Image 1 (cartoon, rainbow, N blue to C red):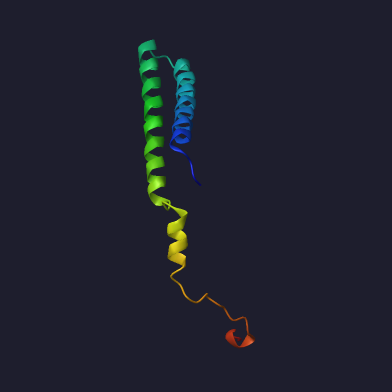
Image 2 (cartoon, rainbow, N blue to C red):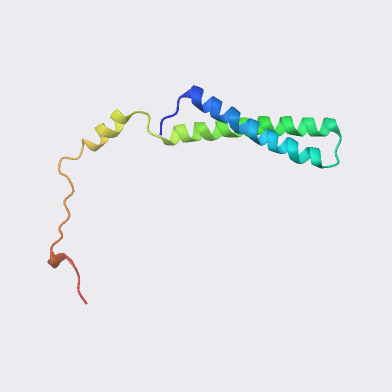
Length: 93
């Protein structure tokens, strides 16, 4: 799956906004001061954004950089793998 940098930032921002909204709703129900609610909501929103960004960088590291590299790697095999489906290859009890 290929995602552009801009799309990843928009997705991470939407995720952070959703997590922040849910946290705000939960914290407004709890008997805390308004400053604690606002601070905690901001921290959850920022943590969600940065953790999603870190996960994106890990996923980018794990994915191949270019499709050509994959094709070049598979071209090194001269002979295709052929599997025999003859009954001699099957062990019978």
